[in-house]
Length: 484
Ligand code: BES
Ligand code: MN
Ligand code: ZN
Image (cartoon, protein in one colour):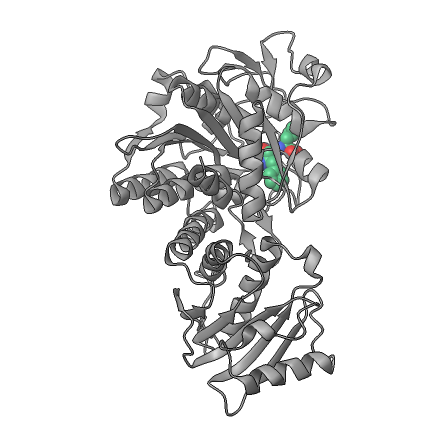
C-alpha cells in the first residue's frame, strides 16, 4: 500500500471518521471544498449520519473530485481512542478496497496527534487487505482488493513507514500460521526461518533431532517423538553494531496439536494448526526488527514439533528430562507446549539477555478466563510489566496480568516421582502452566509470558483482523523494542 500526503488530489473514495460531537467540521476547510463540507454538515444536521460507533454512510458523489463518500462513526469523543481509530480505519479501507475504489483520501484531522495517527494509519492500511485465500479457486466473480493508494492529512513519512512495517511483520506471521499442518511441519518452518535469515542477514541455527539429543532438549524431543515429521529447534539472531539492549523472544511452535495419546475430542482439534503461532510471531518479530533496523540485539528461539499419537509417541507416566536437568512426569500429553518451551526458555536464559518474552497458544484455560480478545500476561519484573503493558495498549493488543507466584498452585506442580508434573487440575490452568515455565527461566532475568490462546484464531473479520490467524502480539513486541 502506498500512502501519500493529502494535497487535493482526485481519488475514488473519500473517507472521513467522525465522532458524535463532530458536527460543524470547521477544521476541514482547506482540506475539502466548501460545497462538499456543507453537504456533509447537512447530512449530520438531518441525522442521516449521527457519528454513532460502528455506523457507516456511503454515498456516490457527483461533480466532485471523489466518486464515493464514506462516513464512519466513532461514537462518543470521550470513548474514542487510537485503537478504535485503527479498527475503524481498517474496516473502512477494507470496504473501500472491496468496492472497487483504487485510491482513497482520508481526513483524520483533530482526532489525535499527527504522529500517533500516522503510525496507526500505516498499520491499518497495511493490515486491511490481508485475507488467507490462496487455496480458493478464483472464479469469474472474484474481485481482487482494489485499493492501492491512500492520501492523508495525517502524514509523517517515518511514522507511516513504521506502521506499514509493523503490519508487514504481522502479516508475514499470519501467512505461515494460516497454512495447514499438511503444508507446514517442523522442517518447513525451519526452512522459512533460514530463508528469512538469508534475506535479512540474520544469524540462523537449526537443530535437527540428532543435535537435539546431543543438546539434551528432552522436552522438544518427547513432544515430537510421535510424528513422522521430526522436531526442530531454531535460533535466529539480529545483532547491530552497538546495541543498547539484548532481548530474547521465545515461541511455541506446535505445527499441529492433536493432543498426542491424550487425543483431543471432536471439535477441539480444528484450529490446532494455529498452535505454531508463538514461533511464527517470533519470525514476524525478527523480520520487523530487521526492516526497522532497530538498535537492539534480538534473539529468536523457536521450539518446533508436531504433537501426534503413534507407536513412538511419548506417553502418560513417562518421565523426561529438560535441558536444565529438571525431570518432568507426564500426566497429559496434550499439555505439550510447556514442555517444548521449557527447553527453549533454558536456551534463552543461557545467553543472559536483559529480558525474555515468550509467546504461546498455551492453555484453553486462559481463553476461558479472559475471552477471545485479550491475552494473559505473566511477568516476574515490574518494569518489564509496565513497558509491555504500555506497548500493548498503544497497539490495541490487549493483555491482562495474571499471577505467577501462587503458593498453593506451586504445591500442585510437584510430582511424587519427578521434579515436576506437566499438568495440574482443572482450575487455574493458565497459572499452573505459567508457573511450570518459570521453573526453566533464570530467576535473575526479567521474563514475560504471553498466553495468546484466546485471541489466536479469529472466527470472523473485524478491524485489523481477518478471519483466521491474528498473529496477536507481533506489533506489541515490536513497539516494546522500538521504545526500549
Ligand atoms: N494448544 C493447546 C491450547 C489451546 C487451546 C490453544 C485452544 C488455542 C485454543 C494446548 O496445548 C492444550 O492442549 N492445552 C490443554 C492443557 C491441558 C491438557 C492441561 C488445554 O488447554 O485444554
Ligand atoms: Mn495441547
Ligand atoms: Zn498446544
